Length: 504
RNA sequence: GCGGGCGUAGCUCAGUGGUAGAGCGUCAGCCUUCCAAGCUGAAUGUCGAGGGUUCGACCCCCUUCGCCCGCUCCA
Image 1 (spheres, protein in one colour):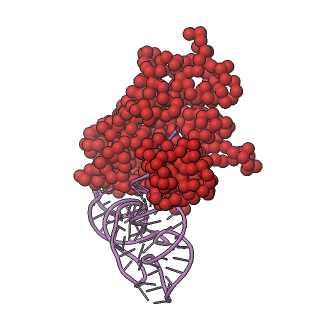
Image 2: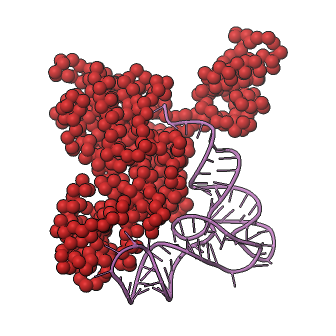
Image 3: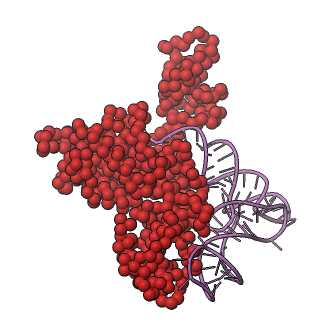
């Protein structure tokens, strides 16, 4: 497998991806797409939107699947994030241990010790029987007694401790007391303020997922779009998470773009729709070029399911084996049965409750639809396309070429006069003008033909058309294939049709 | 946020307490009738940033920023 460093180098060198604000030293967790990268990512998003929203897609019952698009704001009423659980659950208080260098979720720590102030406290991670037993044993030993007295020895959440208490607390992996820092909040949502006054009331959040924009608009869409369950709402947009540790190139970024579908269904059809979306989405990634064994579909075990999916039809990840995750995999897309968690939460929090239940004309009943959510990362998808395409080849001049699926390729074709004379540039330019009405095309008459082919290899351009001496007499050009370097001749007035057949 | 490693041209990397280098790439000209050919020439670095030590710092020290690995996190 190619080294990630080499892929990052090529991305930089050829203008796929740059570090954000690079001339100021960069900023951790933010990335810019250069000319080729912007095209690549647009192609990915365009294919997704086209295949999900525009094209006919047949569902499990053989009927066309109904999906409409949506484009909602990044900043919403902060109550949205209270209802979704992000304000309560997306803030993690963390504690570091100066002695053991460990880091813990503060709300997972329990302090065990005598009730009176000044007593020594032993801290363990909630649910860890071994650590708890060790804490109990150490405390008993410290107090020179045989067993703990449940009336005297309290178990308190670490987050409740005062500074004095913490000074007497011994960490799970420490011997000294007072090595645990005070809990620090890691707020995973970016905050901002709306309006001129900067106070608690003006606080707002940059959305950490696009999904909630869809859920809060569910009723608007139902009222205006003549859709009926089962149907889906699709959205592409930026989301923001203040990750503790951005890592692995663009894989974990603080600003990223999601491609999400919320597909609303009758609760009793969850299983079939879940399986449908899981399989459809897995096949879709393959259809745009992720055909190697690096792509896999992984069903979640019950115990790793999110709180909203515990009782549902299931959750699965579509994963890609990136060079930096190898031999493991990284998530490209999650397909989850979210049940009616979100619609219900918003109905409750906005105060309208059951009045917001969907009325099913056909079955003559009211219910909150269940949701199957295929949620994909546009940046992760782009990164997977780059990793998949990267193909070292010592035999060719560039030493590497990008084997993009033609539909994803940033540049669809190069038009090259073999030499810049004898009227070849003029013929080439006419062809260039014709083709660029429909596709991204590059025209280049400079330098040797080999050099131009090599540049296109690194850009991942699938086809190059070269105007040569024969063109002037027979009206044919050569097509040079990126993957095989093979050439064939095609009539110049057939080039557009030739590309059309192969580019989608 | 902690520990370890790293930061020199667009890329990959040498380098020494005493005037910043190579290969590749990029650009220009000549040449060239199918794969980075050849020849000639050109541009680009506050040696990540800021302090300090020194007669003198890319080199030694401190701080800071960024990257990589591990811990942690990833409802």
